[in-house]
Length: 276
Image 1 (cartoon, helix red, strand yellow):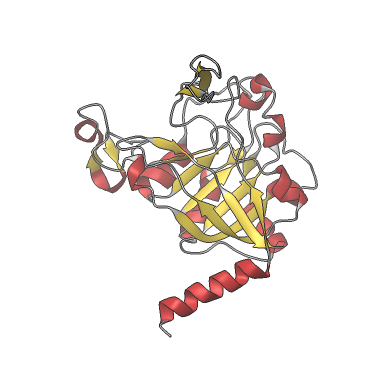
Image 2 (tube, rainbow, N blue to C red):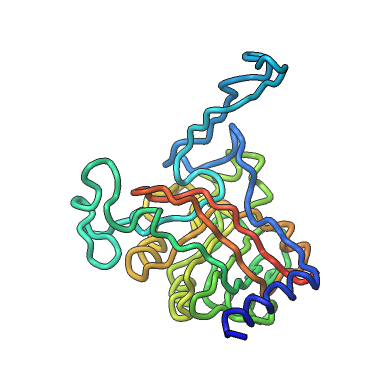
């Protein structure tokens, strides 16, 4: 029996033994909360049942979807952010974007992630349901959350950071938090993740990083650190309340973004797979 066959059999045995899948993303719907920097999501029926009926009585319905790549639960491609005119790896951003799509670091280059995930519940560390508006997640917060989870993220892992702010997703103005600020990652916290060489990290807010009251998305230094300097993908608008209720710690992360050629981001349906 080959090594690959043995590994495949082991995975199938684990599945047959029973697993539970926890959704880590929001469903997509017209009017949902989103960043003011990005186009919103719109869906409408283009054809309704009965608009056209086949000779045998059959009918079909379909839709038109209009959305930005950073709307709903999504992952940032490395083409998303530049600094001093450069993308990750010293790529000239102006040259890369000629022709209406990114020739380098587009969303189609984001790898599918079937890897170890670690759930870092910062709100639980502080003994609250939701972190204070504008709170900055520190390296110490992450270390304490990792201790609570019984697992620390490492090379190639996905680090999922819960602030509790996702509870506000149904109230778009509150969730965007323009006046109040939004809790999120600090540069110090991002460096903690960089040191552990994670492949991606995400959170339950619109911008992932700390947004002070009234500041909006004027500057986003954590995006520079993760995307530009270290090539670490960011996942935003995660839905983490079910995972928190389940006491998620270490898990199998399955993140498969749409392969949008030349795009700066892509919708993703992130899943946490754990033993039943």
